[in-house]
Length: 306
Image (cartoon, rainbow, N blue to C red; front, side, top):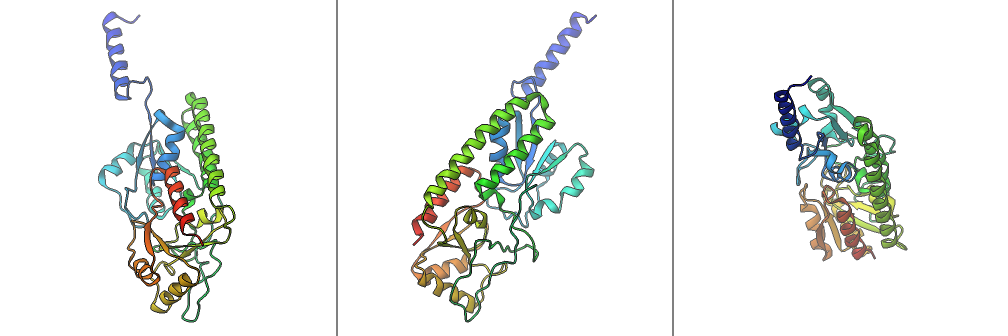
């Protein structure tokens, strides 16, 4: 039989544990994600049941980012890592399984057919017409023949990722299965509403082009019948002849805006903008407020479509 003193000790221990978990009687699940938009997805489904750490900070280039010591500490105690298929993960996740045996790595890109890199038709010295670029996804730092990782910029693809996320949370924390399911259904409704809204925004504009410096918006363009025209050629700044072709194409098609992201230099984009009497506009694919960001980018793209 438990003594009065022991009862007090047990009660005190439970109280301390509850305080350590935000006043709840359960410990939050330590979750790691690579990118800010992923935190948004997991938060919508996990709510107060999860504690989420993001590996790639705002403004960093996920192709080359190196984690800080405190991030390695977070990785060492995490239960779940939601991977999305970027270089940052491929270089490190194999080692993590040895240093943190309890870590469950979940590939949220599982079941998603990615578009290939290397399909972008380059502007040559004699080319003045833009290629068909729905599937243009070349990246600097990507190996030739790789796949475009930017699947978080397409609401239909995020819907698929949400299904993977909810199943992983339910498996690791079955006591809260129904809560995760309810949150998931609410998030799917949000995604579907956003998707319908963006389809309305771009109705009647199928095939129209928008110019970007780094080709991060290919899945977004594909979802809504648009074409992204990248300034980068195979992950590099365009050569002079290619730059002239881009400028001529922009003039012919009345393109006045070039979208850039804060993670990359935009000198070539600024040069083109000056030549065409246009402007450079920031469109951050890594913004953490995912839904609001896609709405804003959609408005910006619509405003420049001719």
